[in-house]
Length: 248
Ligand code: SF4
Image (tube, rainbow, N blue to C red; front, top):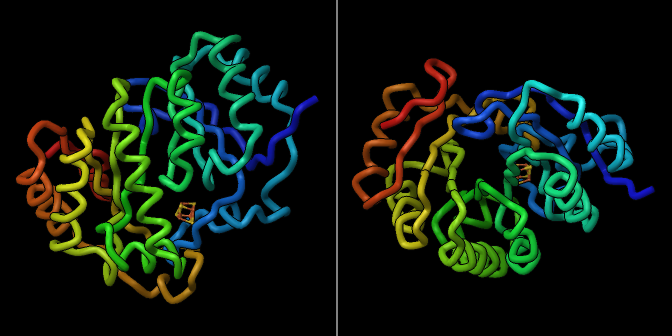
């Protein structure tokens, strides 16, 4: 029986697959070390949180869930594990659920194999395509990371499925000039949705980020409006603790 390194399933979410009610599967491990990461235990595959789970058990769980019409696979980074392909294949072959993957852009060639199975992809664009990307993801090899994320964007630009670019807006790393550059990237590669997510200073991978206050609601809305000026067709959303997901 094939197993996958897994942190759990949320049986019901109304926010992780826009327009649908979905289950959310958390897979462990990540090639990035974003200092502001709020899922550190999952990203680091901490054995107190992550365990090997049979893919059959996950499929059984989904089949018994009569509330959902979709599933989102997130992490960590779902494409880091080879077994994720088998999980996706079985979801498509054995259920009628729509399938979304959240991806951090590090595995373009792997992603290409997955696209025929996907209905929706959420891609992190964490910073402009400069050395700022290295600071955002906690890696020194920023040119390698940028090249991979750029290649992922190129592949997705040719794909007809629904695609969302999203950025967690982290004070000290992300402000107006970064949002403008990221919005230009999302526009160039034809993303249909661009979402700005509010940073939460809880349980961050680098403890120093727990002392950084998120931007105000008003500042987040303003950044969303600025992003919209650089996007010809994409819908723009801002997600805040005050009002949830709002269209700009
Ligand atoms: S925030 Fe960064 S380190 Fe954390 S799971 Fe996402 S990509 Fe990985």
